[in-house]
Picture 1 (cartoon, rainbow, N blue to C red):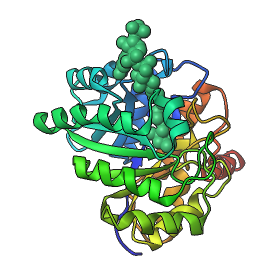
Picture 2: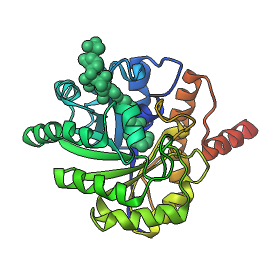
Picture 3: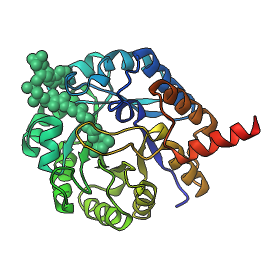
Length: 302
Ligand code: HMG
Ligand code: MG
């Protein structure tokens, strides 16, 4: 597996959307700048969603405008509908992400409509984005289990993936929203979806609730998947996925990849510094094992 992996850093969006402590727009911009400075060039920076649903993402327009000056970086934002699209476009978005669910229960809770209705809602968004030269990424949540409906069949994921791919999404990100997956199931899922969406266009977005995310990523990599969503410090969660914790930590992913001989271009010291800074602001230590180990080593050395 000695080849390239692309990391999509989702900390500023997935990481902060569930935090109780408000993080100012200036601090969100500084966090993103620090992540880019650490070598993470694909960063999801915000969401153009209802302020009632996710107050933490209010000001995503200012955040995007504040960071959009890096020519070699790509900044993503979530868009649930045309209203969100208008705002994202006005703020200069070049990549948007639409987000569907493989399960009805989560779809209802998260975006207040059925899976089929959400697809109908995305159609005009995707068509307008295509006409405007904006790239569209497609998320599918609950690919390995749903907090409301329980088990989710791979076929349900394949069906949504096919639709997103046929719409023209350049990449489909498979979200284990509640982090319940295990490696064999993750592998079977990747294999099933890769029959419809080429594996090079699939991303793995695994939350680490049950501590399985790295193992699941490795299993997915053995299937050929090479795009990993992760969040600095292991931040993250979704208010509509009760009990779910953060994304797999970027530090842990980078450590694993570098250990496998896969260069990430990420400066670990700068990444841990970015994590420490945001952790201070939200008032709790990073859950990343690697960040914790590096911080402990530093404390001993000083
Ligand atoms: P709704 O209530 O059905 O929408 O919400 P509506 O069209 O009836 O509008 C209700 C109000 O929201 C109106 O305002 C609209 O103007 C406003 P009011 O008249 O009451 O003052 N509104 C908006 N405001 C700003 N931006 C918009 C927008 N749309 C409507 N785009 C809706 C439907 C989809 C809008 C809502 O449920 C929502 O915003 N949900 C987003 C939830 C969310 O962001 N969840 C977290 C992200 S998904 C995730 O974390 C999973 C992922 O990480 C992958 C994984 O881990 O699985 C991606
Ligand atoms: Mg997520």
